[in-house]
Structure formats: structure tokens, C-alpha cells
Length: 118
Image (tube, rainbow, N blue to C red; front, side, top):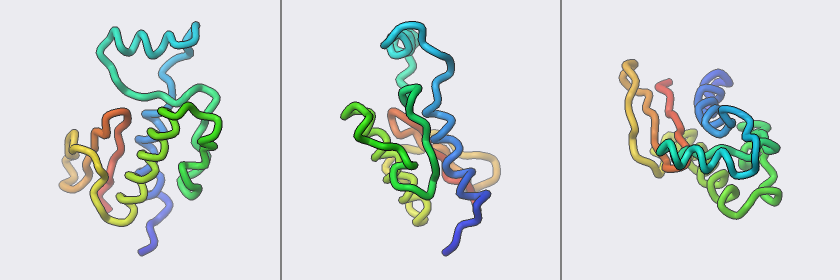
């Protein structure tokens, strides 16, 4: 089954948005400390890492430049993304559903991913 480009973008957009930092940390590690203090456990890719494409394995991110934990999170997100494209559920819990009767947001611990009703 061929998936239209607009739908593929809708599937990857929440992951890309969730992985981008909200603001620039002023000191190394500051962002993680502030998130912990505020009770947020959402993952943010290092500023130097930018997802390239939903057509490339691991969104085109070179895992060799990431820490082991960061690489595992990106690999997990890629695996869940591929499961959604294959019509399967990701290995995450449902966070909420949208009013269109089929789109779901999944909470995957360190990131969120959305399955959009097609």
C-alpha cells in the first residue's frame, strides 16, 4: 500500500516536533535538569542532531554521533514509525484519541508518536 506524502508527513511531524528543543540551554545539561525539576520527562535530541527524512533509516540520523541512550531512543522511534506505516500499533500506550474517530497519540515514554486516520 502506497502512503501519500501528506499522510507520511503527518505521521512523522509529531516525532520531529517532540524531538526539537523548546529553547537553547545556556549550559550543558541545563535542559535536562530543568525538565526534571518541572516534572517533564520528554526527550529532546541534542541541538546538533536534526532528523533528515522519514524515508531514511532512523530518520537519516547518524546514530554513531549520539550517546547510547539517545541512539536507543531514536531506534525505538524509528521502529514505532515503521510499525505505524505497516498498519500496526506502536509498542506504546495510547495517550489520547482525536475527534476524527481514528487518529491516536501514543505515549512512548521518552517521545510521543501519532497515528493519523487515513
